[in-house]
Length: 340
Image (cartoon, rainbow, N blue to C red; front, side, top):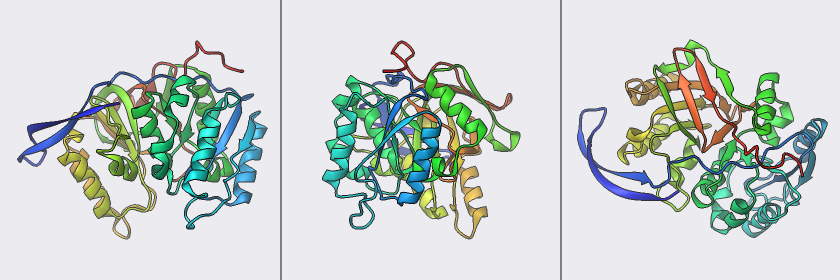
């Protein structure tokens, strides 16, 4: 995905005329879909960010194996560097690229997020990803990899469960069913939400994109930026005070990006807002309550775990009257063999 800075004059929701730089996408069409993943697949579990504790990962692997998957764990999963990295940059990068280049794997999961994926984006083998697209699944800090793969390889990836939390605790029946059905190529997929999830009403369709707000904000203006004009943006975050969320959203507004989207889906904002949650509620209403597009809140993705798989780079539909979030087409390429 390539963006061209474009100076424009527009009226903000606060009634002010401002010059802003918008990032106009040259490729707002859907991304290339990866191959399906079935329960008899072979997955690589990677550690591109922070280290994990062996007991949590070991149990998560047993849960995945109970579903029929063969699992290979990256050798650096329990390595500690600095101490917030699962090994030095070159070690994490080598494990990631080694897996991406190996045709034996059907998909890629991650131990956890934390921090560190941004540090290795300029060394990832994007040609290997484009040559053999397979599901890349994770959230939190893995947002950096999702955005980079979208912008550099043009391949759809998935904001979804990781081992340290989701698979360690186990997916709920509904989330697990959605996970396996989606990756098997079933369609359409429909998630029904209650009226209290609606922050602003409406209907919209567009390409889904997003992830962790902090990473979207941090990558803005870099070669790994990914923002879809006319798309539906989903976002979540963890342990961010209201003023920091305010600052990140304001940055996106001033850049002109918030004015280009057709809908918004906000996930579960775990421990955000600090001791004054009312301030966060006011902020969300200020930014999105009068946006004139459908906006959902407290949707089932984010740092609370049990993440609903969210495909990045495929068309979706929102209808607040019907209470539905629909993925009309397969999120994987069913023309490619489902097993190796």
